[in-house]
Length: 163
Image (cartoon, rainbow, N blue to C red; front, side):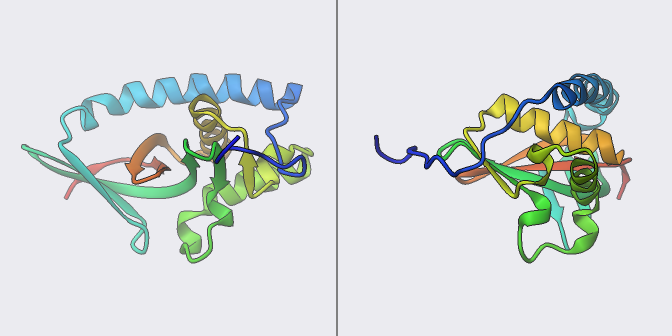
C-alpha cells in the first residue's frame, strides 16, 4: 500500500521471445567473462570508478588494477526500478556508449525494455539480465555491481592492468 504502489502507466519489462533469447545468450557470455575476471578481482578489498576519466579501479593488498568502465544503469531495490545509463543526465557520453548501442538495438528491433528510460517492477535478477544484455550487445566487457546507498550501480569493465 505504501511506497511501492505503481500507476498503470508506469512501464514494466515486457519479456518478448527475442528479449528472452538475448537474456539467455547474454547470461552465458557474462558467466564466461566473470570466470575470466574472477582471479583479477577476487582479492579486491575496494573499488572506485572515475566516470569523468572513464575508468574503474580495484584495490587489493597486492596493488591496484585499472581498466575502462561503462555505466550501464542503476537499480533501486526499494522502488523496484531500473534506469538505463543513457537516461541519466550529467554522465559523460564516453561512459554510456555501451547502453546507447543497446538502445539502438532496441529501437531497430522494437524491444521496449531497451528503449524505455525507467522500468518498474524490476527485481535484482531482471536488473542483472538487462545489464548483461546491454553488455553483450555492445561488447563492453564484464558486469560489476557496485552498491552505493539506496541504488546499485551497474557497470561494465574492460581489460584490467596494473596502475
